[in-house]
Amino acid sequence: MPTLALTNFNILVGLLGGWISLFGLVSYLCKENYYLSEALISLLAGVAFSPPAANLIRPLEYAGTEEDVESVTLAFSRLVLGVQLVLAGVQLPSRYLRTQWKPMALLVGPVMTCMWLATSLLVWAMVPHIPFLHALAVGACVTPTDPVLSNVIVKGRFADHNIPTELQNLIISESGANDGLGYPFLFFALYLIKYIGDGGKQVSGGAGLAMGLWFGETWGYTIILSVIYGAVVGWLAKTLLRWAEKRKYVDRESFLVFAISLALFIVGTCGMIGSDDVLACFIAGNAFTWDDWFRLETEDDSFQPTIDMLLNVTIFMWYGAVIPWNEFLHNDVIPIYRLIPLGILVLILRRLPFVFAIHRFIPQIEQVKQAIFVGFFGPIGVSAIFYLYVTVEFLHTLNEGDEPRSDVAHLPEIVRVVVWFLAVCSIVVHGLSIPLGKLGYYAPRSLSRGISFMSGEGDGEGGPEATRPSFRIRGRVLYPFGRSRSQGIEAATGSGYNIESRAQSQSQSQPQSDVEGANRPIYRIGGSVIPPPPAGADEPGAAPPWTKRAGQPEHQKRSGPEDGERVNGSQTKVADEQQQVQTPPPPELPSRTIRFPDETPAAPR
Image 1 (cartoon, rainbow, N blue to C red):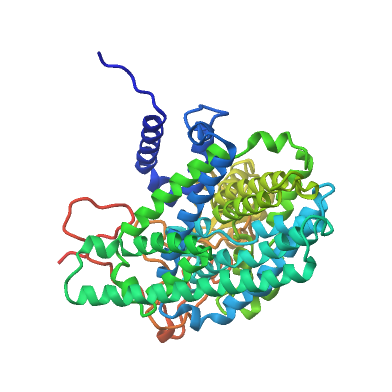
Image 2 (cartoon, rainbow, N blue to C red):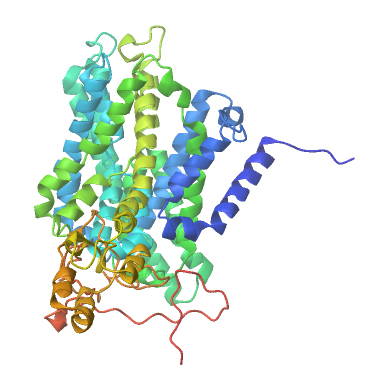
């Protein structure tokens, strides 16, 4: 007789497959129309299915103990970071790390150091009774920017129409490099905690031994070895793949999956030797496409983005299920009224002031708006959770023996509560920033229409309504009621008029006093850091305005809503035709009947 088999495996696999399928049905709507990231949506889904809610995903029941849950989360984070960073390295143009080493050195050097110190000072100020060394360890966990969440702002229609290609590459490169370079900041604090945290009562050696280990093990064995290993493995992989492809030994499927398998190989082998597998994956990905051959061959392929999407959805669902919500409210280290201001201060002061201070020395950041954008979007996500459990794993080694160290008794709880809370804040805030920014730009249009509608009936052609100011939204002008019945209806329906054409038509049919009334002052309502899309930018398949010919520098800057607009909505012509951005013809699509919203139909033959 058939019986239900409600095992954990069946429930988990069915739930994961069902959620990915349901999200896939509206994925374009969520990501390209509403600009909602799959990370935020999957995190909310994981929270909904977690033990405090629907109790369909039960991590503790799967693993058995809290320590095993932490080990699974650490391993899962390593896997996702490894794959993501190889793909990030593959996305970069040829020899990118060599040609753009100056801006990269600024971002992973002084900026990253200031991010670490600023976050540590905020933690030290907000967490009661925490030593500064412990605050340095907590700050190091959230110093790297997350490559998984950074991909949200460098992919898709929003990025294509609002972020220059060179700036996208810089964000990708920085998030990949500083993920692996989080080890020196973290172990600088951890080694000092180990050797001088308790005054040398249990472990002798002092600060001298701690700094020796930091330079020798962290910089020498962990960082430098991983860079060499990643470069050698990436170069050998590229050479072998070209050799096999030239002799027609490799099929298309194996060719496309090669970067993914390379990431798995590096994560496993670097893990075995105890080096920095995260940094090695990024270096290997960049070396793998050093001559741009593999990147150009797979540029139009969707296999790697598909794997990327599956990993992102899965890991953020897992994070949603393992977030320690109860510890945010009930813990022995920091009350919630301190935790919330800490999250706000970290998001504002952790990165933005330092990027803004040096943006003039980074050629990819051409405008103040771009500096604010790059400074604000330094998300905290998978990399922070990875370093969180690396820290907890290291602290467990300090408690071995009959007498556990009292000075680090509360540090694992501090790290767990603070880092998880900051990661949740970053995922939510950065995941909603683009939709809210778009809303802040388009909301003034509705506001202006409401003002025009509520402006009241007119007093006649020569009354005070004739001098009432109009409101400009983009290139359109909305007039209030009062001129005439027909004009009032037009203003109420929100159909603005071109000023020049309106004035011309009125000059032919109305006296001069009415023409002067039509030239009332025009006030602009609202604004946004996000510039407006060009005409037709919101159409599916529209070519991005930042598209340029390969090898040419970008000579034009995108103007905001107030730059270069005329009242009649026409755009100024470019004086230098040689520097005008060239839009390539739409690519010819494969011979299939399905056309997705982000595909441009081929021109008729």
